[in-house]
Length: 109
Length: 497
Image (cartoon, rainbow over all chains, first blue to last red; front, side, top):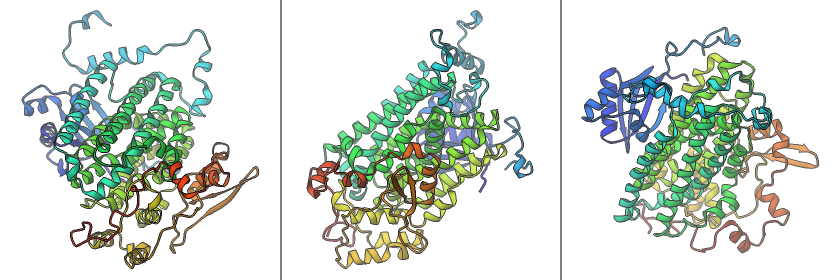
C-alpha cells in the first residue's frame, strides 16, 4: 500500500500552469493531470521547482506566498518552502535517517 | 534584529528564517507570576514526552504580517466569485439534486469550522511549544474565516430557496448532525496534542482532500461553481494546517519512543471517529447527490485516504514504529455498502429532513452497479419496493450508538444491522454501531459515559415525542422542506415527471 508519489493540487489558472511547467522542466517525469477546477502535479519521490523559473514563465516576480493562495492540497513532506522554491519529497535521503524499528527487523516500513 | 540586516530586503532563505524566528518564536515568553506548570498544565500534554518545545517549527514559516497579506488575497478572489455568481444567478444552473445536498453540507460545515476555531484557540493558549501557539492562532483565524464564508454561502443560497436557514438549530438538535457534532466536541475536549493529531493530521490530511478537493470537482461538474471555489479556498488554508500536523507527528515520534503508543492510539481512534463523520458528510455526495458523477466515494477514498494518507504519510512514519490505523480493515470492508446504507436510511426518514432526497434513476443505478458490484444485493430490493409504490417510511426510534451518536444502521456481511455490546458502566448499559466504537468507548469510559443520545433524550422526556413538536425541535418549521424531490417519479431526462 506504500506510495512514493509527491503531489500538489493547485487551483487551475495561469499560476498553476506556470508551476506545472516549471516542475516539468525540473523533472521531465512529472505528470500533470487536469480535473474540473484543479491542476494536479505529480512526481515519483520528489516534486520541486524554483520561484525564479515560475517568475520567468509568468513574466513577473512570483513567490511561495502566492503559491499558498492556490495550493489546495499536497502529498509528501515539505522539505523546502521559501523564496528560492519548493521541495516536496518522500525521499529519505532528504531528511535524517530515522531510528530503525526494532519490531520489524529494522526494515524501514 | 542584527544591524546589517536592516535595509537589506532581498529575499533569501536566511532572511525568512530570521524574520520568522523574530516575529513568531521570539514572541514566546515565560510567565513570572505563576510557575510554568500552572501556565501550561502538564496534564494537558497527557503523557507526551518532549525535551525542548522550542525545537518544533512550522514548515511554512509564516508570521502575522505575511499571513494577513496572503489571506486578504484569498478573500478577495473568493468574494469576486461570489459576486459574479450572484450577479449572473449561477444557482439557477446548479443541478437540482446537488442543490439539495448543499442544504445538508452548508448548514453543517460552518458549524464544524466554528468548532475547529474553538479548538485552535485552546491549542494557542495551552500548547507548550511557541511555534505551535503561533500556528494555532493563525489557524483559529483561518477557521473563523471559513465559518463566516459558509454563513455567507447560506445567505447567498437562502435568497433563492428555503432549506439554508436555521442552521444553528439544525446542528444543535437535528438527529442527522449529532454524530458530526459529537466528533467535533470530542476534539474540543481533548488535550492540545490529541487535538492536533485529530484535527490537523487525521481530519485535514486524511479526510479533507476528499471533501475539499475531490468533492469540489464533483460540485463543478454539477455547476455549483461558487461552492467549489469556497471549498478550494478553505483547503488552501488547510495545506498549512496539514504541514503543522505532519511536522508535529513526526517530531513527537522522533523525539521519544514513549510517544509511539500514545500517537498510535490517537490515530486509531480518530481515523474511525472521522470516518463515521464522512459517511454523512462525504460518501452520499459522490454517490447520490451528484447527478453528473465524477468518481465514486470508494474511488476517492482509495486515492486520498488509503493511498495518500495511509500509503504516504503513515507508511513514511513506519520506521518509527507507526502502524496502519487499527480499524482500516473495517473501513475497507464497509466501503462497498457505506453510502448506500446511509442513503437508504435517509430516504426512509425523508419527512424529518430539511433537504429532499430521491430514488436513483436508471442511469444512476447503472453507474452504481458498475462502481459497486454488490449494490443490487445491498439495496437493490429496497429501491425496487420504492419503485413499486410501497411505503418505505420509517419514522420510529432506532438505537443510536453511544459513542459516535450515529444511528446503528450499518450491517454485517449478511446484510443484517449489527449492534455491538452491551457495555455496563455504573448503572447504565451502552450499545454501539461497530466494534471500533465499542472499543473507543471502553478505552475512555469516563469521557463518554455521560453522553446522551437523541433517543435517550426522547425517552427521558427532554425532547418532545409528539411528531409535530419533534419536527419543530429538530429545526424543521416548513412543511415543504424534506420529502422526495420527485414525488411523482422522473422522466427519461432524470427531471420531474
